[in-house]
Image (cartoon, rainbow, N blue to C red; front, side):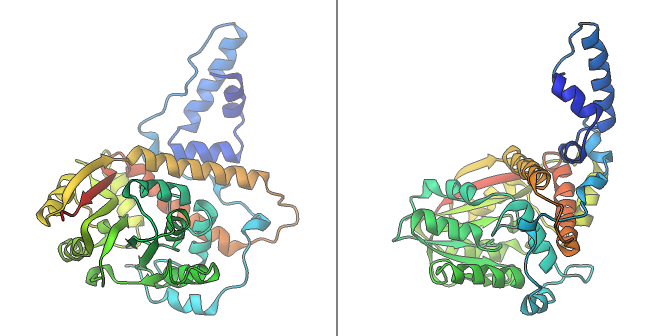
Amino acid sequence: MDPNDIQRWLNPDWRDRLEAWWEGYDLGHLYVQAKEAKAMRAARWELKPTPRRLETAAATAEPPPAVLIDDAPPAFVEANEDIEARQLEGLDIDRRGKPVWSVEQVRGAQMLWGDGFVGPGDAQFMVDAVRPFGLNPAKSVLDCSAGLGGAARAIVGAYDTWVTALEPSPLLAKLGMRRSEALDLGRKAPVMPYDPESFNPAGSYDLVLADRILHRVRDKGPYLDHLCECVKPKGSALLMDYVIDGAPASWDSWNAWKDTEPLELYPWTAQRMKDELVQRNMDVRIVEDITAKLRRLIVERVRWLADALQNATLGTTVVDKGLMAGLARELQLWWARLKVLGHGLRYYRFVALKPA
């Protein structure tokens, strides 16, 4: 073990605890290993450098108290609550009778994922994801999972193309449209609400993009029918979604994940997704497991957040309890997801072309 790691795990601060919790390390085991390493170094023995990850740690670890800090850095404190946004919260209710998205959670999500984003995958990630499709000012894109429209605006900025962005949450759609209009992108990157269960888009597009939306749709048949129909001949569909991969490694983690999610989930297997696209006369070119990439994106953003909070000046900051509550909810959701990603649930990329 590296000397810096020895000191780190003998006396972990809140940032180290957050990283260990998120990555599934057992802090008790790391402490024992660091203590042994210190003794062995003193005796001029060498210990293997990499801490052993315990496979069972993810199923038993609890979030450390340090995740919830008392103060929010000034950069994260936003303006007063928006009355119209508050009203939109009530239009999208989860199975417990609470808003799927609240103003606080939107703010907390952006604190974690970046301005204009409410999930892993920043602007550069999405720009790179659509790069193979040759977008240009003459082409159009339909984004069926817009969030706050950050991906749509990034694609417009990179390729000067036209993106119609659809979002199931009325609150996210409204806030996303405001951002597009503020950037004078109300026509090139509009963000509009829609109901995935009655999805029937108008027009046709060179690229249809759907990221982590299909697993939330109960009746996927009609959804895929309309999605494939609106792809232009020689156009493409890029679907990225959760799929089932065998039996869960831990049913406790699996059930905890499903219980933590605000809505019921209906993921398919990767093979089922491919077969359904083929049945709709789509030429499936790529079926790729990108679970490791998603996990890396999640962990990297948590580390970034830890560094940002560590480096911020907290002395004169007014406590923003709403923001911290929203961040706590977002961390809770992604902690539950991370414990099943790669252990019964995987994240796949599907690329399908529509024949001429």
